[in-house]
Amino acid sequence: MISNTPFPVKPGATASGDTCARGLRRVPIPSAAFWANFPGASTGPPDRPLGYTRRMATRKKSKPAAGAGSRTIALNKKARHDYALEERLEAGLALEGWEVKSLRAGRVQLRESYVLIKDAEAWLFGTHISPLTSASTHVHPDPTRTRKLLLHRTELNKLIGAVERKGYALVPLAMYWKRGRAKLEIALAKGKKAHDKRATEKERDWQREKQRLLRRA
Image (cartoon, one colour):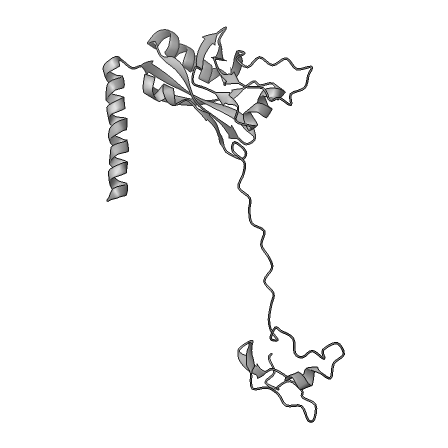
């Protein structure tokens, strides 16, 4: 409970007319004469009124470095231009230690990547992972080595059927982090014909122009 009694003032000392908010009531602030009776306070009253609370300094969050903390590692933009994409799946990757470090630095390209079925397993070809300069000397990295995709047997059987009997291709679309592990999004796709590619380019150009017109409006 907040008292309504003003601050004590010694005889002969007068309280100043200034007041400050304390709770829901306003109480008078003691004058300089009052504070002069306390050791170390001969210079006068404090420069902050009673009831003042210092706000704690907040540390500014620094922006993460490029490639660090980002969920997406790399995208294969060419795939959407060259193929008609249908069903998509998520696959794990069998990687070596130096490759994981390179992925965290964003040193990977999917532009020339493709997936083939061999010995009833899915394999990633053509993906270029650049080794870091700080890699151990006893490691001999191969940037474009063939990497195994980790899929359930039911998923593999489905992909095998689509590729061998229906003529689909397997195309890598994106590489990203999920719960601390690198994942690859692949899609069952069929190659576009020349007129399909032209139609895709026209649609893309129209979407860009439409966005530009909307920004000007």
